[in-house]
Image (tube, rainbow, N blue to C red; front, side, top):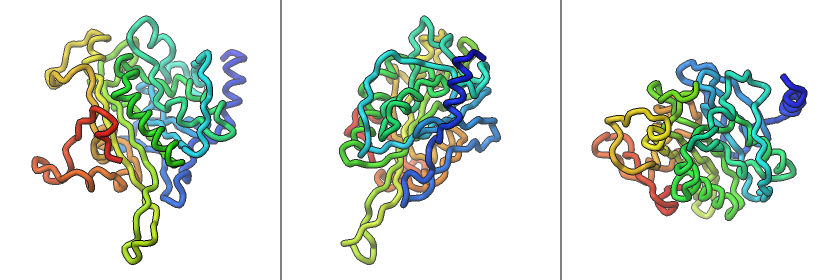
Length: 297
């Protein structure tokens, strides 16, 4: 390990990470835990934490606290991506994965989300850890109508209403993800936004109580990944363009990722806002999203 990496590692040792009590007086929001026994490493940064899957060399989940009342616009200049020295080089995907191809180093925790309060500049710098990056096709990552559009909508909501949010993001790992440069490339990503929603009391409608609310999303980049890595198109992928986005029950995100999201499943807003699917008889069907106005928050 170089002197620079050693110094960086010592600095990161003091990071507090995501605070599960951030949405108080709402319930604690614990870090997601694998339901299938997969080995993970939790890495704390400034205002966010990462659940790293060393076997996949990528994060299984990231959890960030967003304080809309204290957001700071940190100027972006000279991105300094770095390998986290708390991980071995074989436990994280570095610059070699993203060189000379159409994959972006997609921020799982977007650099602006933890950028609030007195530690905004440090939080911004922390998001450039390679542990916080995932290979996203550039069209997918940069689209204002999809991944970036969803992030902008969530951040604008927090800023406009001085709202506190918890945002959980990560890739959906599948056993048949195509391998590229020693990394199996995820074809889908998920995001869960959680916040406190004022609700009138049943006994006295003039009084309000804050209850936990959540919303889950899945974004699909399958055809774009197949174009980049040269793998054959899956027969199960319909011809719906280069990418697709859905609002989905948070319980479905649990099923896809095999992660325990704690109280976020029961707090899901979607089952109460969308009629039950006659086909399933239990939960709403996935709802296609093409623009921010389609989001149910």
